[in-house]
Image (cartoon, rainbow, N blue to C red):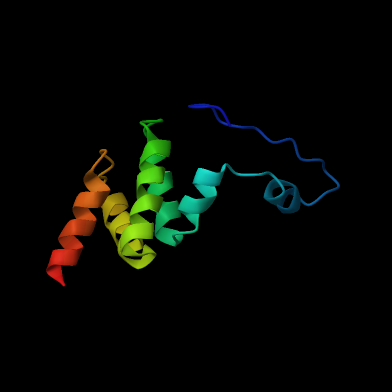
Length: 103
């Protein structure tokens, strides 16, 4: 997938569209990010809605942060970021810091 471009997929009428789509390889960054959990997927949808704004860089930041502090903290922060539409470069780490001091 190229930066800022959607990838279209042709699906034949006789085959299951889900099986054909699932065979497409996602970039490593996206797979690692989505592995954080359902809130990561929610964040990605919300962050991409206004258009590409360094989303891949922010996904890398999230996966690195999950490796440092654990995916549960990042999962919670991603959910809060998506709900409050906070997608700036250091918003996620700021939310994680806040959640950790709150404990």
